[in-house]
Image (tube, rainbow, N blue to C red):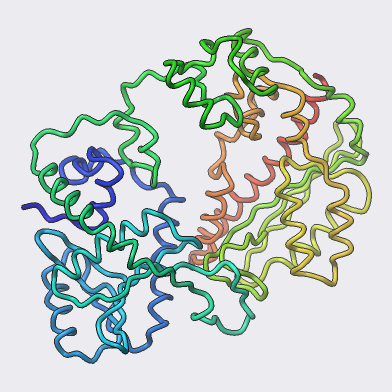
Length: 489
């Protein structure tokens, strides 16, 4: 009988083909992206910190290749009967295997099973995860009387002195939910064990399950021969699930095939007509909206990172911390200057960002952004640096959102239903994009910034910082060119 681990049980619960590939065709999986690897690393970091809540706990150190040794050590520590908690304890029952993040000895007798997650909320898949573990632990003879998922607590605020681990983490008690799933878990696990014993893979078509609850690493392989519609219905902005279901039931996958009398929003109807006509359409008063912009015009973009474990005073888990900004200033036609600031140290960047930003944007003229995100960042900076809150509020009052203009006035079928700057820029400003950059999106920028801070290689740090500056500068230069394109339209 094949051994089924907790992670593979979760894979099988998402897709039987994913599970079969995990056993027989692992080489077909895409390598994890830098962003996905960062999520894994975050999970390890949060898990290690959670264990410090139990200072006398025992860590079962054997890795995933030393399962036999881990099982033996776990059994020996439990038999000694002194450890108040075990971390990464190994249990096996009827071919099912798990390493429990934490098992805590209860004062009243028995154990509490705790699964640590680096998120801030409880999810159904976490409960399924714990239910699998509960089945294995009880099957192996452990007296488990309670079960919980431990997450980060969103409301926790770091005082800048010492992390309060009791307040930083939150326990979600899920024993009853897990016990209600035990029969289902056992039945599904036996089915999965039979499945992976088969020589041929199951026949599973791609669908929404490929991305729920996690992105499947085999998606590119499974979809390699699929022919997707030129303009699928997913390009319709804000398509409600009920409308999507109606289209699916009618067998409509392509926007061109949507009947004229099908109920659509105004914007969806514009998208529909634009795809039919295969040309761009101006559907709003661009001139009137752009007339709100005052000279000298500036263009602002922030890059942020969001530490799961708060680093700076007054911050909470996953608070966005700005570490870099870029500002282009258009003094007159074709006269554009650039300024930026990147915080290259691991102390709190916010006071430095504020001081440099106030100097960079001056005290007059509109400040163009491409979303409302910069306003959100400025609001957080006003709280973090209250002595300069009035100056920050003045900057916020000058913001002008170019995204709002694009979405309200123009559409092209090559936007593909998205109004992100990376979607509209190559269409409205042909030849301009991000493909030539080492870093080309904000999530990757955040990951690389943390890598640079943690690197002891000065040349590596310097190169990453240069790449980050180049990306942020491209974002604001893109807005300059996009503004010009909108004026021409």
